[in-house]
Length: 237
Image 1 (cartoon, rainbow, N blue to C red):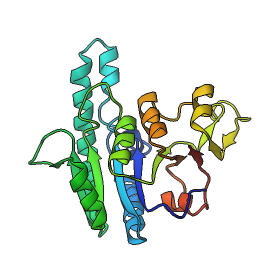
Image 2: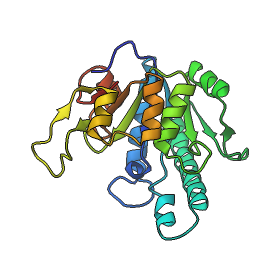
Image 3: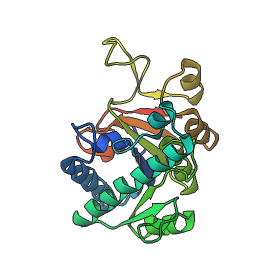
Image 4: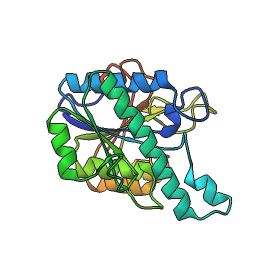
């Protein structure tokens, strides 16, 4: 169960999730559902930031595996996150919410350049801070960007939406006897080599004592249900 004392949170959503049942692009119905959940959180007094991946549009790692330049591929992946974040910002505004899209890539005609100061101000004013462009550097995942932004914005917790309702000791898709953890320490995640986030992201969270809640993206009630203890999740930390 997440603590009711949580006020400022960051949510990480994978790009693949925005594709819904498809393998590419953005499913408008799911995008609207995510936007509605975010607006609902702000209406209930939460300050919300979000980081979205770009895997539904482009995966730089796949290009690098095919022999192309990794730096070029990663920059293309960052641009894909900008596309997703622009779509999400528009969906939030159509739901009656306030949103501001930031980017770690400098593109003033498209999004505001990210600074912690401006993003915090957005949160304090009841807007949703949508963070795109990853960390702005190649070789870092959007998991790392999410952890970094959560620390920079002084968030109380990081919520990572996945396809399953928490962290398991084995892949529940392949092992029906897999055990879900209600709570697990950073050290146990490392010793068991559980794939919560990539290690750079995880190290940032651990070193800054940032709790991570892993939950199923399609859970009824969304993140608010996790915070209120009405749905399954795993707390790391």
